Picture 1 (cartoon, rainbow over the protein chains, first blue to last red):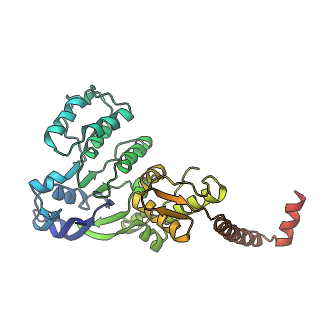
Picture 2 (tube, chains in turn green, red):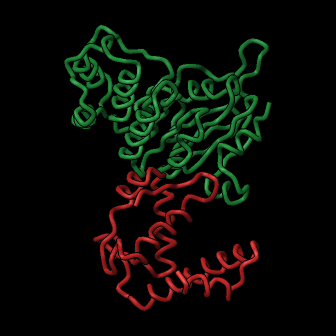
Picture 3 (cartoon, rainbow over the protein chains, first blue to last red):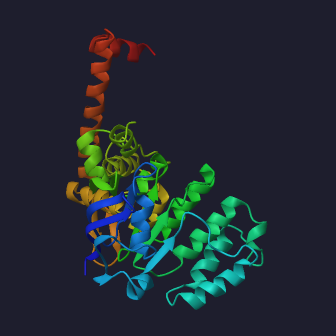
Length: 232
Length: 117
């Protein structure tokens, strides 16, 4: 099945405030999709709905044809924008945890990536720098053999060199049968690894398309277009 | 050569130009096998689908061909490479001449300057 994620008429209201407004979106397999929007546009709400951490007020989300629930969670690997790991644990202990939780977790893949950047697995998370913690977390999330990876702000708190490394991890784990959705507002750093973008504005989709088509049509970078569309 | 991809024009076109230049300059030889899409994409830090599109474009031009099971190769047709290289040279020369004309230097002036240096 080519269609991996299908969202129809999706709305989410917090009380009287509408965070997502009748949104439609379809994502196929083998894509790296940028979910771009200013703060408060509804990015994280959308991600949490897909990941099953929030329930929709209206509309539906299908992942691999299944509604959000046990089946969809099995095939989604989600990197939240805040850490959820126990900082007292060592990397080894966290790896064990992932193995228990996720049948598709590839321990060797994780250990190879950690070794490649010299992270000692006996180290406790709390002794690591913020950037190293973020790298560990991303490696764990990318080490699952999932169908849909959702990364919420994976490069927000890291230096430019680490950013390059993060992009390298994402690219080297690219799987043509899976797709990766990356939410960010640091567009210029990430736009070359994307092949599709979604612009989200006030809970609605403002634009969705292939990045090179957009560059060709607009004659400018996605970053420049973003600044134009979301001009304050 | 580092890839130096810019974000303000289609990335696949820049990849096509980059690989073409590598072939023209001999950094990649005729008949040589190209790296896999995945490796090239990681090296250039671009999306694998974009790299794929660029390689397909090179195939369309005829500079690259694929063998069913063993990947992509640079054409062995040296004549074609020469022809495309000349086209590229003319294209670049035209741009250069226009620029020179813009600052008041004619073709004759240029030839004189080139020969005296």
